[in-house]
Amino acid sequence: MSLRKELVEICHKVYARGFVSAYDGNLSARIDDRRILITPSGKCKGEIEENDLLEIDYNGNLIDGNGKVSTEVKIHLVSYGKREDVQAVVHCHPVYATAFAAIGEGLMRPVFPEVVLSLGKVPLCRYGTPSTDQLSDSILPFVDYCWALLLENHGAVTFGKCIKGAFFRMEKLEWAAHTISVARTIGREKVISNQKLKELYSISEKVYGIKIDKRNRFDY
Image 1: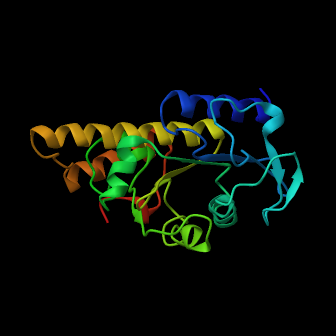
Image 2: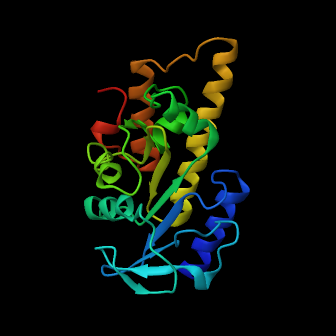
Image 3: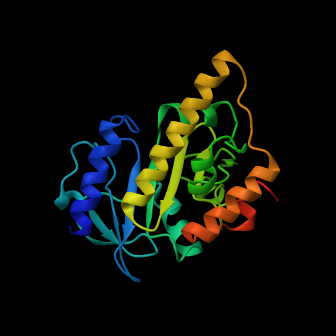
């Protein structure tokens, strides 16, 4: 499957899953060391087609395409500039994850093993006015090592080694936020003990070859 086709498919999925509404959100993927493929501004993700996608350089300049580059493009540029392992960026407004962002709370407690390993810590980035450098600057303290971020009073950003991987992290983030929200209606979520976390990380590394940055681990 071509990168364009795959990005369009994921755009349709984020819209179908309710992770974005109207013209919200933006998604991108690296093409090579000179170009990024990104969704245009002002286009519903559920209606995106391959010829709607834009090619830009790493300064945000339009190389190919007829649409307008999103004013939130710097989130993507900063992410690619800081992380060679990031090949795709998904920015959405999923309801439950965004609800946590709205109350000023990141997902910083180790509740679910699969979330501990696939996302790690999901910190809250301070509020930044959209279309300004404040927004991209807000992710700088965490973008070096995190795979998912909450943007205060705004939404969420996830990263991946491919566009599907970034989407799956957004899906997992929303599932975690939703489940914790439900748990809090009947009690309070319990966290995994430090001892069990060390056991989980050890198994993850030995069995699956997943080595997690210490800054993104819950046992440090």
